[in-house]
Length: 307
Image (cartoon, rainbow, N blue to C red):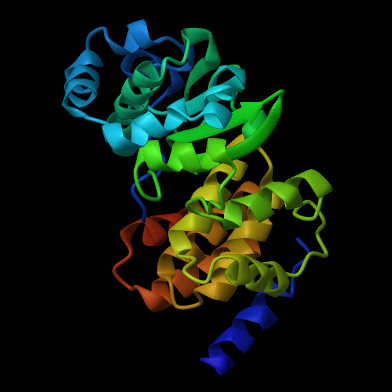
């Protein structure tokens, strides 16, 4: 394994440059017809065709009332009216269909006012993956949906990512109470910091270094965690930043054909066709039956000849 990682580092160092939420090949027009995008309302979710899953999941969810009663504690109760909660979700996403109705039912039981909750629907097309038309979600750096961002006085307290750690009511209580809370996908916090500080935009950034730093933050880190992040950054046009994430993923998971194919796609976006071809060939070495990689390799070689 050490030899494998060394070979990966040598390959990645020569340049300075299959999960449930994979983008789909819908055009923006088709997506707008099928999904709610941008700032939306609960009334829109209650209307067809979204009511088919929203109403069912809202009605069926019964928050634990013993936990709900804890929100009546004096120090928690006085904080609830000061909170703003931004929900970034996708009407195409199974996790959103399950968790968003549940969260809104919990919000109703807690007496949160409609103006305290902002709903932002994002797309799942390749060109605008997990983005809304006006990019209202951009400031939050959301890589998984749904994400519930809890803020107070304009400052983020914490976020619940994709699904609760325990239950929505227990998680939210811990956040409001300021109890220790580790959200799902904790590596994203470090990625947010790197995006703000310009680390991921620096072409000298070490793929091995950031990969190991992310692994220390989250020992259970899986390849889909960084893959999702890379695709969001790539769809935003932040190709250099996406490349850093995909390269780190290949360091951490050198035997994953999916990681190498994703890195190949990113190099293609950056018009570094020689590297894109090498990564695609590596993906096929690991998985000779990888049909998307086969098709990409043919396309890449043709594009390489033109350039």
